Length: 380
Length: 260
Ligand SMILES: Nc1ncnc2c1ncn2[C@@H]1O[C@H](COP(=O)(O)OP(=O)(O)OP(=O)(O)O)[C@@H](O)[C@H]1O
Ligand SMILES: [Mg+2]
Image (cartoon, rainbow over all chains, first blue to last red; front, top):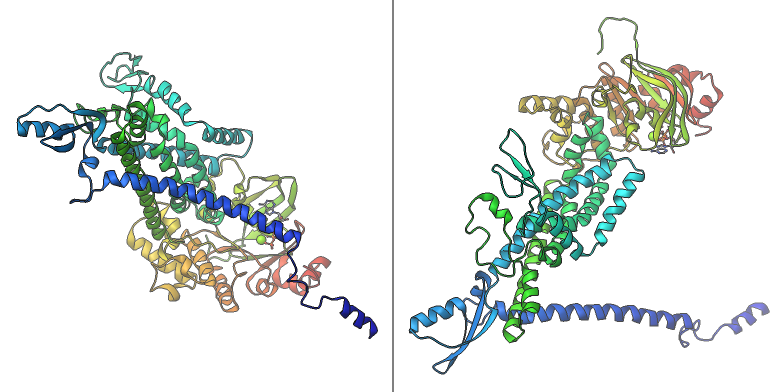
């Protein structure tokens, strides 16, 4: 009885001391929590500043207040010189084509301030980037899925496999400009060429066939760019594919094998179809890289300026792949670093960046939609 | 396949002096047994004693396991050593079908599930496939439950239906031997009874090996029973004998529920 009484006395009168000033652990916790929170807010702030700047400045170039509200010229024309001048008291900013028409219409010759690359639009860059992305992703997905199947389904674990995995991992860490140099050396200067007629620098003929072969190089071309970019994203695609393949339950493979399927049949019918949505989703990040990298295409595929669109002026179909193209990231580089800066080039820079972001987001969206459709078709 | 004449049943599967390893760990020790045509053989024994391992050796499913290897001895199916390097595992697995411990229907329609084994053989004629679907689903006692929704996903079925779908799928390939690894472990008594009935009716056309933890089930469905313990075959005999008068103490202890 008395023991309980003393115990009771020692206890704090109010509650269990919850309302005392916070313990040390509690205040540390609070400080750490705020550190994390501030870190996150800071990142959020940076991201918003970047996006808002590009959207705010870029949309001024891409959209306009009068009908048709979109700057059609910017989206459908090639880059041109911008002419800025005053005529009969009014100030004009006209790109080269329009300026010539203006002159011809009025029958006058006007002296103007000209700004290179600041007029017209970026249509050829959009086309070029889309072609590069489609080409590179086709190559990367084909090669990547094939090697992922080999690595995770066929090969036996051991030293060789570890070495291969390690080199793929290393490939992921190689700076993109190194891929550019690689592409220059291997594809631009020494890409293998097959042809039905002798060409300059051919090494030998598959006699008696009229097929000539040589490491004559692909020049600065779409093909060289696609391959270079494909090699750059290959590590992403391979690890994405391997992961997706591993996620397919072993039971499906066993069940097909037990029904008399060969290994390849089992993979083709019961592994790949279900792994494909995952492969595509994880490869979206590769799409953004392919579209965005400047260094790999700088030496291999990109022209600063080209008048013709890729499908114009082709002599034979194969020429399509052996022509250089304009590309959005390289165009941003050119208008930001290669020409004198002024208010007119800034419009171009942000307009291009804005369109670029929209396109990358669009491609990502398309792959997500494709994935959803595939998921529906092969419901688990 | 089965012969109507009452000639002595010959061993369809013969395991002799068989040792099997997972890496360094030996999983099977010196197994010797015969499984005869049109008989149901039940494997019983405590968990981890190697029942599944031996079963998976009979259709070389263990080839998929990286570390698996055979130490000694051989397994013959129909007189042919199945671990001979010249053996075509695809042909072997067509002859030796398997139903897994965990039901694993493909994420395809019921129809496609059943005919998978035919499709991969290049059989694509609709009438042939339709006929096979009906025959196999009836064979697996599933037809009445699913005949109106053959194009829904196999995964939309209940666990017991899925297991019977897996059996139907195995039947479609028309194997001689059917290996069943605890086909009823996830089933309720009703579904279990259906599968057992099924095994009874399949006995006429197939040689069946079934792994089970359920003593009553082994007693009900099997002709022969083999008791395994710690990777060794302790005793194998007619099911009645095993359950009525086991020769081995361990067998008796196990089936009377004193351990395991
Ligand atoms: N893939 C594997 N790799 C390594 N060891 C394995 C593998 N599969 C099984 N084993 C081992 O082999 C032994 C026998 O396993 P097995 O699956 O044949 O047992 P079981 O009799 O079927 O048991 P259960 O009744 O629980 O299914 C076990 O000790 C198990 O740990
Ligand atoms: Mg088992």
